[in-house]
Length: 120
Image 1 (cartoon, rainbow, N blue to C red):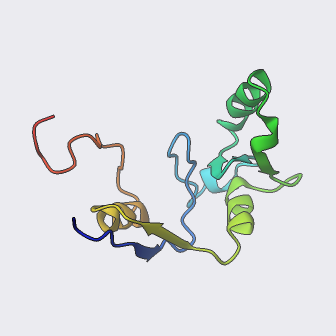
Image 2 (cartoon, rainbow, N blue to C red; image 1 turned 135 degrees about the horizontal axis):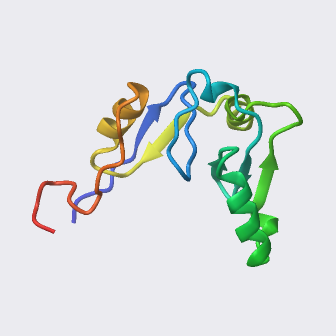
């Protein structure tokens, strides 16, 4: 059985919603106010109300780990929460390609079931 190799990639100051995959690296999106962290996922100002409603409905509000400060942009909030941890660690095969795509602003909404161009 092959060994699992973990690789670390520096994502810099790229900010993206973990629920809708919208980028918050440039205006006007970079200026939007609000957001939350649910478990370990950042929810942008558009997604946060839906995530909070769902958390209330399923009695999971304890999993809301952080909220943006009053007047804080989602981008600044994510960078503050992330602190100096700008590294993604992955055991996946194509994570390098994914990180490069994210850093260059490319589309990442590709099917994951067919990562190796094999029949599904």
